[in-house]
Length: 442
Image (cartoon, rainbow, N blue to C red; front, side, top):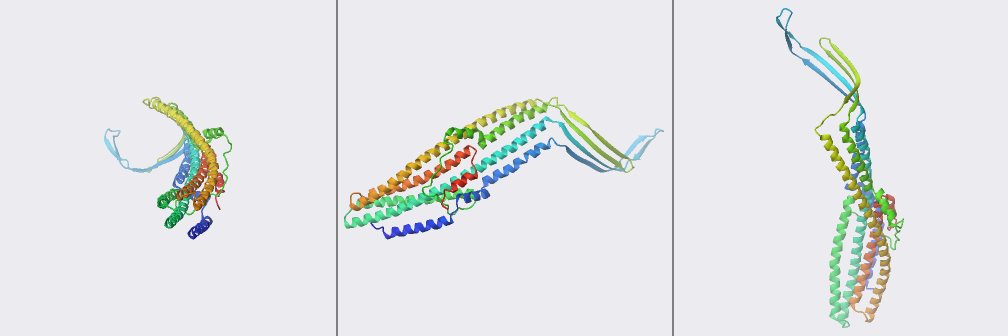
């Protein structure tokens, strides 16, 4: 049976639109590059890294010499009253001008608190680097998720509109057949109900697409244009290694959240030692040079070098209390580490199972798509010869479009779960995003 002219025109227009869209569409790598430049969360993580890299310089400063200079330039005015040798009190003016300066150097020789602060600063810098690496991986997964969310919404809208076209044809056919008396009014009502439902679904799909595009805009800083779709019949590579345990083990040791939590435990241990150092003596090398002259011509020069020391004796139990506090905080850091390990392991398990389940769903839905197409053709043929009614064709069409939507979403979810699996294991890189990008239409 020849297709109605309107259906041919709509199909032609959609094909032309798809060709234009694919030629101008942005791919996943281009969207990711826009996110690198514009995502506020990633920019904040980059600034945090820059701030963290300064910590090591600040910590090392406590071990290096400090040099200071001070001086004064004074005009002194006064008098001295005192008895002379005859016992008579006399008054003498003491107006004079004085100029003085001092240069001093202090080099710590033993200060355990400063040494521990320096070690903590190195750990803090490493923590900032781990946090930034995690932010990089998070950006990759966020971009991929938002990108495929838009494609999912586009597929839903395309499928709904295709269903609308098919339902419109069935409604027109039902009306014609009712007019010539070959079908009952029930077929027309069923087709009308199906048409009304698909129109409502179209509005919902349009709204969902707008929301998904707005979510991607938050990441890339501008409203996205057309996006490159996934190639038809693309093959998704299963996880390698194919066992779950290596991924879980990697997540418990190499996940950047776990790495940062490990570093926080080390920082907490150093903090205990730093506070205990408040019981210890400190020893410094000191050197100074001073010069003072006065209007009267008196000049005083002094140079000094040696060591100074300080021994704490009692501080009102403050040091002991601070040590107990830091011991409790170290215990908290260890518990936080364990919680982070468990969360990373669970994330790896969920992503691994999700990817394997997704691969199985894709395979099953590909078979279901073939069956649904055959079912639709059979129902159309049966409708033409009178052994099938209008609702049978509508149901077959709805099943096919629903299967195609589910198949697309299963592919998208499987791809994203593959990226999340590598992120949980701490091995996700931009090259992995490039491999996904190769699956798109270019």
